Image (cartoon, rainbow, N blue to C red; front, side):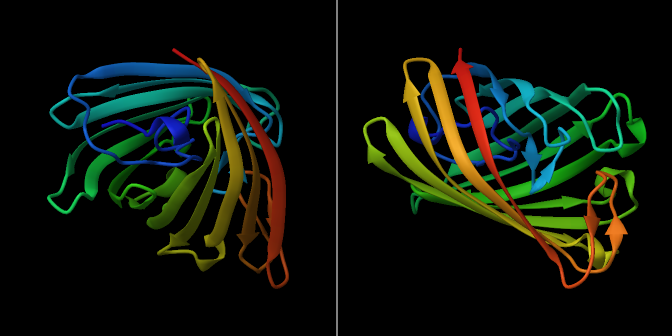
Length: 240
């Protein structure tokens, strides 16, 4: 399963903050990857680098039969941490194109925080995509080790503006089945460009945190009727 070149991201699922795309399977298996830097590593509207720049390395494997797998490591730093540490993500699944031309996928994702192993968690996901829009639903029985069952739904889209310039958008909603104050909506809109092996993106990321005064495990404080945050994020990577 391949990501369309004009909308390629450093990792399928995170960069999952990242635009997960489905397309037809290539005729041959492919191994690809990228290495780059981000001005802020945002995951579902929340910074996992304490609003600081981060480096990221990603690898992706797509099999001609429909199986795919990959992962990434990021030099993250949660708000409650005093130093940077590696944050690992791995995923695996299966995808196929339907007779209608749409593509579907299903798989699992694992998140690992070596310095905070009690935060490690897993998710299952299913997705459906056309040529210019995709949707995915994730479920975790214990999100970030907080004892919360969670659902996360997202929509992603994009279109070409020129031969080397594309626009993209993303919208997502995190819903906790056990703690309503964890719920949040987030969105992203941006531009992407490429030259040979180099990729660059700039995006405006927005997140609306649920009301009620609280401090989450990332150090974010919410209160009142809800808090809206916005952030401009730059991303430069080299594909290999």
